[in-house]
Structure formats: C-alpha cells, structure tokens
Length: 415
Image (tube, rainbow, N blue to C red; front, side, top):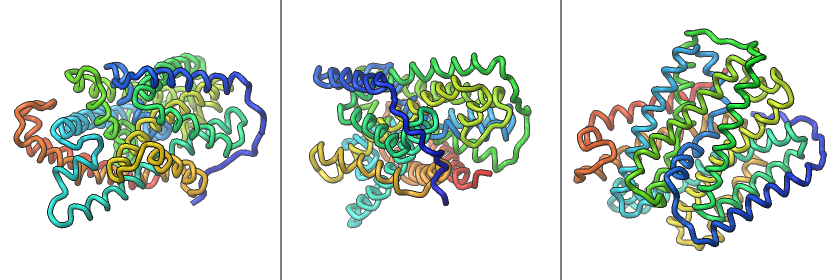
C-alpha cells in the first residue's frame, strides 16, 4: 500500500512569526512547569477528554456522514456518543477502584492478570499497547505533516520533524502544560469551526440525503465515531490530576459531548458546503471555498492532531515508565522518538492507520478493560454510573457487544 500522495515541494521559508509563535507557546508552558502547578482545573480536564480523541477520525467522518444520510448518520453519531460516555465512566470507576491506576496496564495487572503467567501476560499486553500507541502517535505526525506541507509549502519531512518537536516538547513539560495546551487549542478549534461554517454559507453547493447508505457504511461510521470520541487513555490522567474529584463525571460527559458537537458541526459544514466530499474532508472543503478555508482547515487539523498527540504520548510515557522503571528522560525518548521514525518509514495511509489501531483498540476495551472494571467494582457501593447500573452484568455485556461492533466496523474497507 502506498503511504500517501505528496505534492511537489514548494520549499519556501515560513515567516519568522511562525517560529516566534511556537517559541512563545513553549516558553509560556515552561513557566507553568516551573511554577509547580501539576493539577488540572475542571475546564482543562474536560478539554483534555475532548481533545484526546478529536484528531483521530475527524477527517474521515464527513465522508461517511454524506454516504449514510442525515438521519442515519445522526443516529450512529449519537449512539456512539452515548456508548462512549458510559464506557469512559466505567474506565473512571476502574481507575478509582485500582491501586496501580496510572494507566490500563497497572489496572489489568491488579484485576485481570493472575497466576503463574501473570508476568507473561503483562509483558504481552505491554508490547501490544506500546505498538498500538506508537501507531496512533505516528498517525498524528503523518496527518499534521501532510497538512502543513500542502497548505504552507513546508518541506514534508521538515513538517514531520517540526510537529514532532513541538508536540513531544509540550509533553516533556508535564501535565499542566498539556492541560493549558488543550485549553488554548480547543478554543482556537471552536473558533475555526465557527468561521468555516460562516464561510460555507455562500457556497452551499453540497447536500445530502435524509436517509441512505448500507449497513456496512453505518457500521463503519459508528466505528469511526467511537474511535474519534475515545479518550480512554486520558481518563486515568483526569482522575489523578483534577483538582476537584467530585467533578470527574461531569468532565467526562461534557468532554465527550464537546467532541461530538465539534465532529457533527464539522461534518455538516463539509456535507452542505462541498460539492464533492472526499475521504479526507479538508481537501474537498478547500477546493470548494478557497484559500482562506484551506488555511483554516490546516489550523483545525494540526491542532486536532496536536491535542490527541499530547494525551496519548503522556499515556505512552506512563505505561513505559510503569513497566520498565526507567527515569523520565530515557522514557520520554523511548516513548516519542519512534513515533517520528514510524511516520517517516511506515508505508501506511491515514485510513489504514485508523482501521488497524481502531480494531485493536476495540478488542482491548471489550476483552480486557470491561472484565477488569467488573471485577474492580464488585465490592463497591459508590460508582459514577450508579451502583445499580454499574454492577449490572447486562450493562457490561451490552457495552462489550458495542465494542465488538466497533471492531467489526473498523475492519470494513473504505470505498
């Protein structure tokens, strides 16, 4: 499979303000780092949940929405949002009822892996999780680099290095820097989506049917939405670092709801503003509206990839540090440098990354996270989902089935 289409390099030097903006952002977040602020506000926690999954499927979802039709697309999106909220509250309860709860690996070691083969299972899952997260991070680097190259004329490989340097640098500064970055990025993303909506009003060349599509397209759209709403690896971060732990449930619900709102808004903008919706939504949007839309779309996509990279990279660092016991500097290198190498070397497209990682992710949640959750809450009388719902075998089995559907949808080829 070919990796991607790369247009001929324009090779122009970006304006100095481009580099100055990056320097100011890094210095500002370094200030937060040295101020010793290592807790997240409720707003930062909410937007960490929102940004964690936003960059994953946002470019592909509009294509499936148009193929599916408005009514059925809304059903798939709202159903995915509801299932995501319930499953993320389960992960939060699992985190609250686990001793080693920085990331999923420690929780599985406590509640799922047992017996003589506990260490073997831990090593196998660590390797699987490590590779999956690397692929996820490589996806963000690849997609952001393509957008920067095509929009601003930066050399493609320079774009990969630039995005990686900024994103991994922010991760190195710690959780507060990540929280502030998520907050700033999400405010800009919301403004960009609003601007794109205004720009498409005079260009209502597109349109979509109320109903249509096939069961396979519906399943693919559902899987894409589930993957895009996923902030599973950010939930333990929110539980650990939020200042007011009584607001965990509200932050998770609002975070996923904000993600769904942005995703739906962007999808409708593309559906009604683009005559020919492409598999990568920003291409058709730029062709229909013009240069300004192309620039705004580039900002939107780059920030969406950045917000996702930050939370997933932090999760990767926590997993590696927990499993190996290494110090922070080598863990940071081991967790982030391979993402750049994979983005440069692996011959995978945007959709191929999503299909591969989405399927593996769904299987992990269905077969490992949900059983761990059920075991962890058996003796508890206080759950975010409520005791009756949270301890119900029917509830857990229903979510299990929904994630199997997600795995099946992720494996359906895009056409």
